[in-house]
Every structure is written in C-alpha cells, then in structure tokens.
Length: 349
Image 1 (cartoon, rainbow, N blue to C red):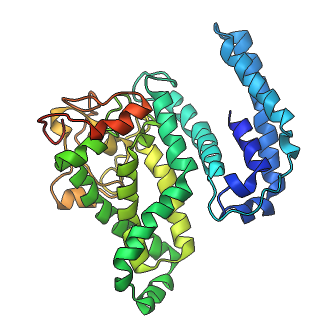
Image 2 (cartoon, rainbow, N blue to C red; image 1 turned 135 degrees about the vertical axis):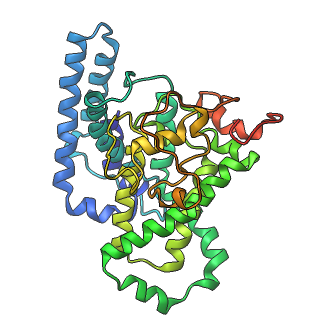
C-alpha cells in the first residue's frame, strides 16, 4: 500500500508532496527512486513468503497485487504529471516516509524487546492507522490551522530584536530551549485536558487504547491535536528560534512521541527521571488507580516533579485505557464521541 501511495507522490508532487520538502526530494531523486524500487521488490518477496508460509494466503496475494499496481503506475521511474503549482499540498509523502521508517524501526524492536505479549495487528490497529494517516498526511494543513490563531492573537508580543538574539544562539542551546518552553506549555494544556470534564471527552480518545505500542500514540481526536499543537507553536512563534533548531526538534519529537508509547521493556535506570521513557509514559496511560492523572510531561519529567504529578515506581502498570467510560473503537465513532451526552463523570471517566 505504501508503494502505491509513493507512486502517487511521484506522479502528482504538486498536489500530494509537502511544499517545503519538494526541493529536497528533487535534489536526491535517485535515492528516493532507489528506496521505492527496494520497497516494491520487498513487497513481492514478502508476498510470496506469506503465500508459502502463512495459513491465510489472502494477505500475500493482496500484497503482490498492490506491488503489481505500483509497477503499472510507473515503478521507480514514474514521471511527474504537470497539474500546476499549488500553495498547499496534502503532505502524503510525510505519511508514507514516516510509516515506512517507524514501522521498520519499531516493529522489529517490539518483537525482540517486547514488554507484553501482543500481536503486531492487535485490536484497534486499523483505527490507529487512520489516526496516523490524518495526523501525518494532513500535517501541513494541521500546522497551518494551528499557526494562524497564534499569530493573530499574539503578534503584538513579537519583538524582532529579541527573536534575532534567540536565533543567533548555538543550535544545541536553542534545541534545549525549545524542549523546555514547549514542554512547559503543553504540560499545562495536557493537564487541563485531564482535569476539565468537557476537555477530557476529547482527550479520552487518546487514552482509549488498552494495548500500547508504537502506533497507539497516534490515536488522538482532531480538536485535541489542534489545541496541543497550537500550544506548542506559541512559544516557538514568540521566541523566534532558527529553522535548523526547529527541524532538529521536529525530528526528535517524531521519534520520541512514538517511542514512549512503544511496547518495549527498556527501563533506562540512569535516564528515567531526566527524560520521558516508555516506562514513564506507560504510567500516564494506565488505568491502575496509583497512576491516574500522573506524568503529564511529554519530554521532561522535570515539570511533573515540580508540580507534584510524577509517578514512576519500580514496577510496570498492569492495565491501560479509560476507567469508567470506554470510547468506541471505530474512527468515526471516536470523532463523534466528545459531542454526545455522557452524563455525570469524573475527569478520568
């Protein structure tokens, strides 16, 4: 499926490829054509292996059929169709590359170092993949939607001379400052989503997964994602960090946000209070009484320690999910869930 979607990106770059990334792809076109070729070959090899080794032959046949479609669309030599330049694109390339890289990285890691025995295609994975698609394929549209309110509301607070001084700092220092500023802001937004009942209706979607893995962190209601990203963008907009520092931060966030939800048993004894790890964040997702409304920080346990919400004992949580009310498992049902009447409930209901 990723091969077919990648072919669409090659054929319709003006509509589907993120505008900021297009020059980079063009400069390294041969590399990306090679990646596509390797993916198509792997599709046929793995499809054939599935047909020979697995009891169900349907997945192998479907995989090889999709590989054939990718070849018919032009394969690694697909040429772009001129449809005219567009100001905003779908950003499908971001979804394809993220899912390819993250899947190739975390699926083997979770098989080799798994915390709990659970299937790769566990219950709810299709819903989480839809959330992943919306948040990644629509990354440019979501970013645009979160930047406009911040710019409109806080443009008066921007001081260009101060921003120039911030951008002139060493990149490593700017990276640390972004982590501190963004994590402090989103800590309070995240805490509000837990403690304000009508906000919890939206955030409950993120906590509805009863099995955690690398894909589960993508489960998030659109309004929750928009508000959280707007909060993250605000200090970045006001302080004026250099683009290179922002790229480093985004790259870190892309991996770290997936990592802390992963089904990995690693404990990091010397780092467990310095930066959020899977152990630390799993306690945030637990429905065990001792861990409810704890560990709100996304990156730095510093904020939870400072404000009394840190919890990281020497054992792992037993179960995950919401406590009293379980949102539906289908994607559309999760989008509509916050707008339905739920009656009296606790903030973590």
